[in-house]
Image (tube, rainbow, N blue to C red; front, side):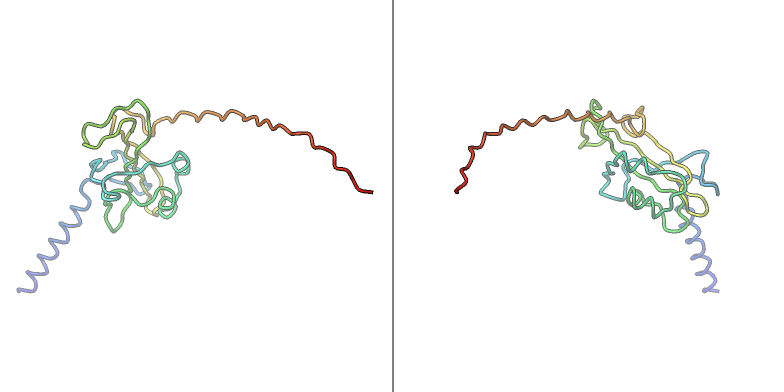
Length: 174
């Protein structure tokens, strides 16, 4: 009797843990899509001390459907949020982009001017291949994510002028 009561309690606790792990996550379909992506709280990052990272344009260009979790890990690094341990079908990131003219974020005490912050979500299909990608602006709230980066200025050609002093001819001994 006592053993069955302990077993039932353990089962209830396990079910509660599983259900709480699913709370706040997107409902990901077998094909790796969702009708309503759910993003975690922006500054509840569990990786890199709640700071997020600055991805490069090259890294973001590499992101495409069909990549494995290992491929994405090599490109973007580990997910920035606590995604769970089993059956994880979504990874979330907090990215920052240098965008001149953007004011400091008043919601965080150490906000820096010229930074746009966005969340990025990768959804995986039932075979664990990336299928869909979603963006959400954090600050400014009306930002385009990822922000359009200005084209780098072409380097001006450099002209090097070298003066050559005439050499005095050496006499050859006879």
